[in-house]
Length: 182
Ligand SMILES: C[S@@+](CC[C@H](N)C(=O)[O-])C[C@H]1O[C@@H](n2cnc3c(N)ncnc32)[C@H](O)[C@@H]1O
Picture 1 (tube, rainbow, N blue to C red):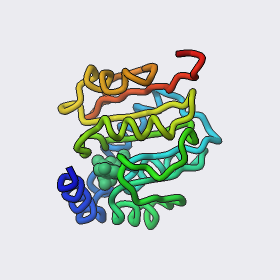
Picture 2 (tube, protein in one colour):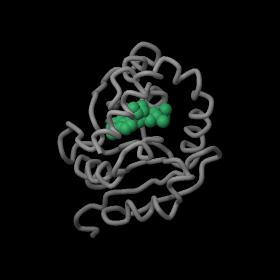
Picture 3 (cartoon, rainbow, N blue to C red):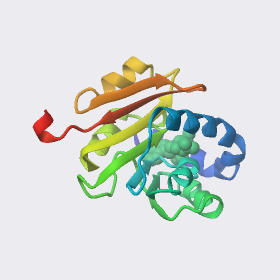
Picture 4 (cartoon, rainbow, N blue to C red):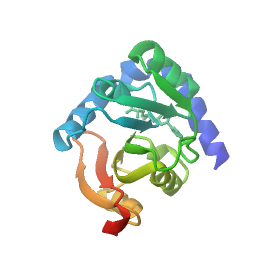
């Protein structure tokens, strides 16, 4: 498990300088589709898990405060330099150093196909998400069918929407119910 994480981190550290050039147009198409599907409110504190160079964080920062976290130092460094990231945390998505029940919107884009045990990341997200808070998550469709994404999140969440993005990924939006709604 640790070896896989080290390998993933090294690979993103080594390619960080090229990431935006290589992926910006693909990622932007995904973000546009997400925004057309799901209205992201303004004036929120958003946690972007596996933010990379912050292509989506940058977009969200127009109307919100965003904490961008990632396991790769170099990806965040590029994000600070090129995309103006403000709050960044180098950390593993399986062990997020963020207060419990403190965040009302969490985004996690094209990340969980890289983690050895996606349910650990989902557990962490669940811990720090406020009751009533929402998560927008995408993952490579060839590895995560919509059914698999729904199964991963079914235990704690109410699923609001799930759909296929125009390129590569499937997406799901879910909500942590308030205690009285359970
Ligand atoms: C395909 S990139 C996506 C980056 C960004 N979310 C985007 O939309 O462009 C995957 C990112 O997940 C990060 N990542 C992989 N495993 C991680 C982990 N265990 N914890 C935190 N970040 C991780 C990588 O370093 C990389 O920046």
